[in-house]
Amino acid sequence: MNIKTTMLKGLLLFTAIIFGQTTQTIKVIVPNNTDEVYITGNQESLGNWNPNLVKMEKISDYERSISVVLTYPAEFKFTKGDWNTEGIIKQLNDNPNQKLKSPDSKNIFTIKGWSNNIDGEALGLDYNIKFLPSQYVLGGGRNIKIVLPNNYDPKNKYPVFYISDGGSRNFEVAKNYLETMVGAPYEIIPETILVGIEHGMTNGESNRNKDLDVNYQETGQQFKNFLFQELIPYVNKQYATSGFNVMIGHSNGAEFNHYLFLEKDNPFRGFISISTNFYGKRKNKDVDTRMGEAIKNYNGKNFYYFVANATYDSPDRIEAGDDYQKLYKVNQNTKIQFKKNVYTRNHNSLVPESLFDGIRFVYKDYKVVEKYQSFYDYRDQYAIDMESFYGLKVKYSLNDLENVLMNIIETKNEKELDAYYDFVEENKLWQNGVMKEPGGMDAMNQGNFYYHIGALEKSSKQYGKALEELNLTVEPQVYFGNFHFVIESFKKLKDYERLMEVLIKSRDYASTHKIYEGGNKGTLLKLHYLIASLSAEHNMAKEEGEKAKQYCIDNYFKNKLYTLEEMKQLSI
Image (cartoon, rainbow, N blue to C red; front, side, top):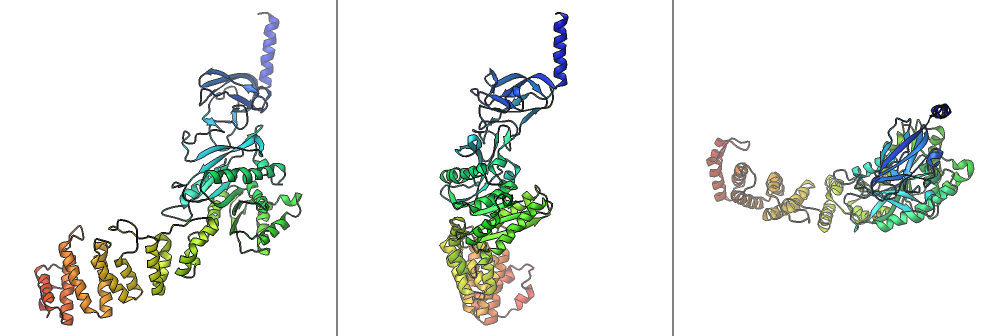
């Protein structure tokens, strides 16, 4: 090697060091042996964010490689030739750029999947991810995440919540809330489908601010067209939806919700707007006037609008939330349910707390029995309301009716209790340990509630029926565990003949059937004592009374009902 060549190489090396350049080999492991991989990044050797310019070499079935001269730090992504086919490396949310800070940085990457064909199950996800092509938005489409209820059944109909930051943690928060609030034991909201929209990237930049264009110009209206004409029709076609759609938006997404509301063909019936703004006031001077008119003139089905302000947010956002509340107060409309909450939070920490409240507000009319003035109102109107408000075919449960029943008991409304029993039977809401399938409430429980409202004739009639249906529709433990109500019911009626008949039949049943795991010893002693006492007190059924008295003497053990001496002295 001559001196000139050595000097030239040394000079090139010196220049590379000065400008932070070096030749670097980058390798990727791909999920499919047919994958053709391109690398694109923030410098000329990486294609300057052109997704189909720099192709990597196939080294083996699942390994691709390229050697390029880099300036550090280097940022890049892997694609299959366009921005809709980004390689997923670490996380789905926002799919961040990969970075090499120096020649010593990790240079081997594993692609878990491609953004237009993500296998959620293979990635351990409990939701589906689909790429939806679009003729409107940048990049020609968007990834959408679809979370179905655990008990999803295409025969039912489900409301749908959309969230415009499907690639952020906001999606996970919404998902967790919707899953937690539904079903037993909470049953706060109905089963709901969640659709998260990922904005993706174009030329290395996120599409979010272009999709959620706060001035609602070309790209914003294109995203609206994607929502109205492509995404929502697709979801409605693929899944069993009820027609009740809600959009969740944070920051720019909250501002974008206002524009969606102003559209004549708006398919949403609810908005949750977290930290909103009115940027449009600067470009479009009458935006607030249009909002007010839209609120005032709205004449569709019930609409729910929730706005959240943060005390440590930027002043213009706080002002916008306040302005929206003023617009509603000036243009109040009974068709629109509006609420603004203020939280001691900042722009981002506001999301979790307000999102829970927003979901709850949207479902403020779900399972709210108290709004109906009587049981009849609930019975006749609730199902109609749920279909009108949320598109739901409701399934009643006894848990829903707890407040109704307690109100009937407190007001001692016998006619409403009759109607309640009919309703339970008609909708087959009751099932106990001996009933093979749901049906009406058993006679013993009916008798107890009649007793508590003072309908003694009905309670005693039901107690007699319960005795005849022991182990058929009535659990023996329930009957004998509540036997003091049986006694009091007949005593208050002063119907001692029927009481004696019930006592004798109850004794005979307890003598021949196992009621409790520990045996019937205490129950039998009590029943014989009651027969003997009733016989002595009212001079009736003397033969049965004498037999009961002798049983109490022969089988005596210490108890709270009587002493042995007292029983011996009992005169029948």
